[in-house]
Length: 479
Image (cartoon, rainbow, N blue to C red; front, side):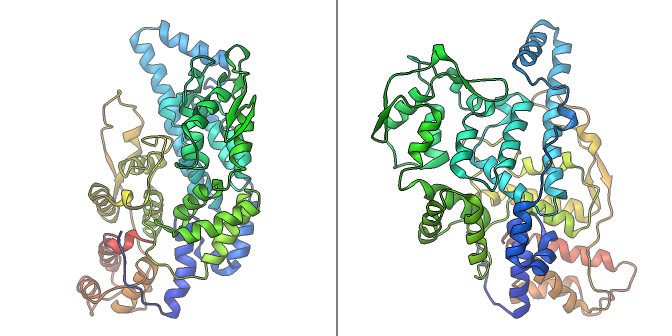
């Protein structure tokens, strides 16, 4: 993993406790002033109690929602000619893009974005991709459930998630029937959602699948169908009974190792790409004491870790990278569809993870290909160009890439027009890099020379060149 030299001044520590934590608890430096003004505890309380939008997005109003509407839509596709089929399917695809844009807008506009940060975490924990679920309304329902319970009880959220139409569809539980068992949901409930590999047996998976047999698509949530249920006794973690979905979750959460998988993932999501096992156990034990309530766990982790210095412990995910970049450049013209496209280029396709394990994070965010993509995006924006939203208006046929056109933008970087070159370099580095070695300092002084006049008409262009250099540094990729 990338590391950087740690050398702290009072100002560096100030920046770490505001800008760095703004990136960890949100998606850019936008919250740094709030964190500094309110203090971390008040900032968390504000984050926990902010309201969220519960209204169905307008673009989903005409999308099929009920089972009868979905059946009718599928029948219409089956019975129409190929051109009409293409149009119907493109309408669905267009709405799936609108769903991404709708969510990206929340990332951009929420005053306290920690809830959306946690929605994204749960989205990557309880994976159910749009590509396989295929019903936009079910994907939206799943996403809203994660939003509603973002700071709630982990056990209760687990129960609710495995009763979503999106999840039973995604993990093939619609094919799980008495005497014809499908183990996918049962396996992932243990391996990826709750207790982790090494803490259960194959018999637990088999009997869990029997308990989940018959749990299939319902009107608003998954329902058992009597003719497909298995009502015989099953032994699960040593307990025998006619268990159903909620019973499985109750039994799992009685096991001693259950809190550690989710605690490790939360630490990795917010703070450390490789959290220590001591920290995982310490916070995991606390989560169990708090009966799996997420709000007190987040409060404890954030308030205790806030006092520590751990620069460079985490590689920025694509969303943090993009939002920090566009906000530092004060670019408002980048359309949400373009943001979604950039995210996909960097391996973070919203609603469409590659597999049920979700995005790995860490070093996977900085492969040579993704690093190149980041540099290309920085060049594009710093040079005053962005992909036009028109590029995404006409949905291409499956397998085709959209034809790109570009719009002009006017990026600008805030700097003190009364400062000299070294002062401007220092201010940008404190905001973006935090620590700088001697060679990097010389390179930056060659870009912004000693005779730089910050009041000249072209001063912004010179600072933009410096900014572009900084955001391509390996150290910029870290928080």
